[in-house]
Image (cartoon, rainbow, N blue to C red; front, side, top):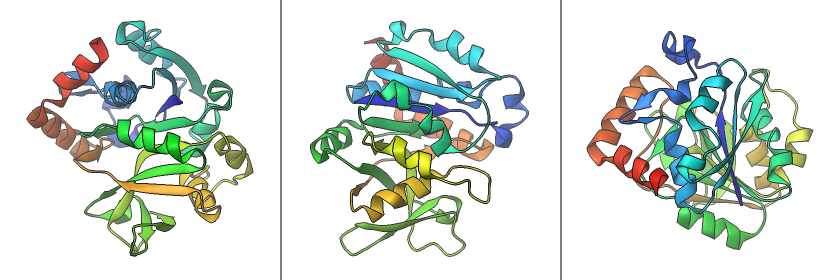
Length: 249
């Protein structure tokens, strides 16, 4: 299995900080934000990782990470020329994946728990997709999963006015190689983007999507409030020291 970190986007919610650098390079505790998903992938045994980012700050990302050798990783980089959505960015990973399954993390996701158990479970699953859910306040800000009594996902709705649950889809996904064929069938949404929610709903229709409830804290650090909250959570849990140890080992 290979890893993909999606670190594109304009970072408009974090202006003016993102005028000078990619938001995924902003500090959280002692580490650049992007270190957190990289460390979790490495901890799960995934060392071949593609980073997809925008053209404007690609140089900053490469200057920080290089080949990944110093972090015990083998890194590849791909430019997303335009902000066309998460699914569009994922589609750029097809050649890199080379028909292998992928674990995909949005670069502004910072979380406490390990991915190893979920990755191993998906390997046993063998096909389809896996998503991780988190119970949140204000689910209308996220993609929201409709669940049955056994926590099976029935549907996912993007930023619903009336959420069908309090469980959001985190920016952590696992897909088989069919995901790239699925992305090619998508049409832009009203936002002009290829939506990852639509990808997941196709897997639901095929009855090949599994879901797990993510324990421990998780945060999308894409706003000033959540960036501050992520910093506080990281410091309280010493997660930044753990991440540095993981990447230096």
